[in-house]
Image 1 (cartoon, rainbow, N blue to C red):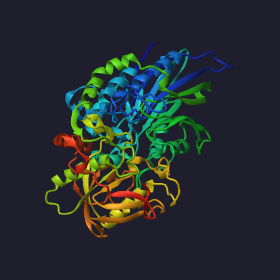
Image 2 (cartoon, rainbow, N blue to C red; image 1 turned 180 degrees about the horizontal axis):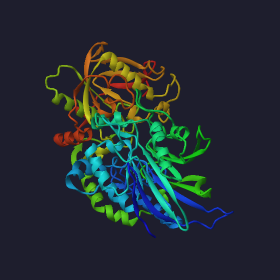
Image 3 (cartoon, helix red, strand yellow; image 1 turned 120 degrees about the vertical axis):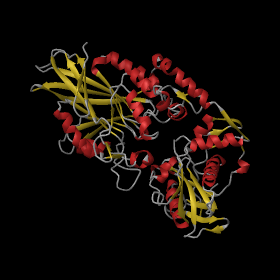
Image 4 (cartoon, rainbow, N blue to C red; image 1 turned 90 degrees about the horizontal axis):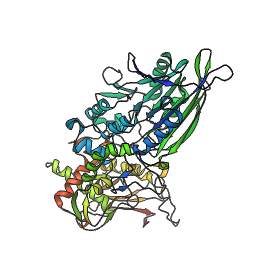
Amino acid sequence: MQTKNLALTGAAALCALVLVAPPAQAGAASVTVTVVGTSDLHSNVLNWDYFKDATYADSAGNSVGLAKVSSLVNQIRAERGADRTLLFDSGDTIQGTPLAYYYAKVEPITQTGQIHPMAKAMNAIGYDAVTLGNHEFNYGLPLLATWIKQMRAPVLGANAVYDRTGLPAYKPFVIKTMKVKGDKPVKVGVLGLTNPGVAIWDKANVEGKLRFTDLVESARKWVPVIRGLGADVVVVTAHAGDNGLSSYGGDLPVENASAMVAEQVPGIDAVLFGHAHNDVPQRFVTNKATGQQVLLTEPGRWGQRLSKLDFQLTKQHGRWVVTGKSATTINTNTVQEDPKIVQLLKPQHDTTVGYVNKVVAKSAQALSAAESPYKDTPILDYIQQVQVETVKQALPGNTLPVLSIAAPFSRTAVFPAGDIRVRDVAGLYVYDNTLLAVKLTGAQIKDYLEYSAKYFNQLAPGDPVDVTKLTNAGNTPDYNYDQLSGVSYDIDISKPVGQRIANLSYDGAPVPADKEFVVAINNYRQSGGGGFPHVTGAPVLYNAQVEIRQALIEYATAKGTIDPSGFAVQNWKLTRDGVPVF
């Protein structure tokens, strides 16, 4: 098999493969092209849970990691032929586990020159193209640039453009040219689109450097270019869900626009999408301009699923035309890990395991986050305490009361009685957020809490309380339910949204509307994540780029003992007509 690289001006590269055509039928040759795809890997390489220090396990029997994905890809390449199979990814690759954190922050690849574990694994598996997700920007542009250099596959992001010039900051697309023995080659174009929410979620890393254009408009610009270069099949890899909604307000383009791209932009055959972490084996959307059916698929998260798309092409009037297409998702729990990937990543995996098992403190008693979405729990008060103390130390001249917000990121987090390890703290605070402090008034804090309280389903007095149905109203995720420390308040879940906060008080007295507070807050929330009111425009009093997770670890190390008697305060509760729910 002869394989060669062809250069394209602009931002695409052509890679030639050999594709054997089946015997011609009814006078027309036909070929099948298979695309397999991952998304939202979140730095899961091995089937391992670093927070539990054990093989990954969940109630559904899923597996995780690229080592599992590799085994499935090997099977499909063996069945279909490696020369007729392409492998793409739709983003959120280099953040999400302690493995990624270690090589971004503890021994950063930007300083050591080590190959990032995700680059090492993806290069070994042989990805053909990878698209940027929003979490690619979490650790800053220098680390992202280093990872992209280490990747053999092109890393795509057509709608990430330079703020000043509007020119693409990353490669917009790639075209893969597959040779067909005795016939015209088949060209598969892949356009990569990332999420506009990066402008909010990683504002500190991208503001003034990059902006993120509308997915539909970007596809409208680039799909004709890809078709003009002779692509017979066009696949969009989009880090965007398919429901057309956004988790943010304001003027940013739509967050979850994958189905909108399929509906509104002619010339697309399929969209491999991500971001929503859903398992979508196959969905068809009708393009409004052409009436053609566009195929959509999403392979879940963490390497739990692999999407497989088949395109049947038939020769018509001298060119290849897609005459059939289908998709499915395959569960990676059906295969063993690829020993080649396991062995390749073992040194970096072992280093990370050693790091997460370092003892940082002792806990006076077992603390669990299981009830934290609906009860004021000591383990979340620990986060509040660290945030408050960090802000107070940084603002020695401040005379305003210091409050703090925290959300229940993980219901499975536990501080065991006795030794507390890095993984215990990391399991409580699973996001790479940094700490800020803003100034808010009493009226703004009331609005903020009312907005947060929409997380609860309305429940009439006397109705039975089922904690499994109490929370996540309107599909609000746990991480978008904020609890506030430093003031006392009730949440009356018998009342409609917007009328739930009662008895809001500070230091035993009702909070005046004009009273000012300093509020410790994470960068995701302060920059607009979750759409909470007032915070994006509030005066910023502190922003030292301190990582909250690291602050939690360092505070525990300095104290030596985590004892809830020193920080746990029952300052909020759920009620119905003034009667406590619990």
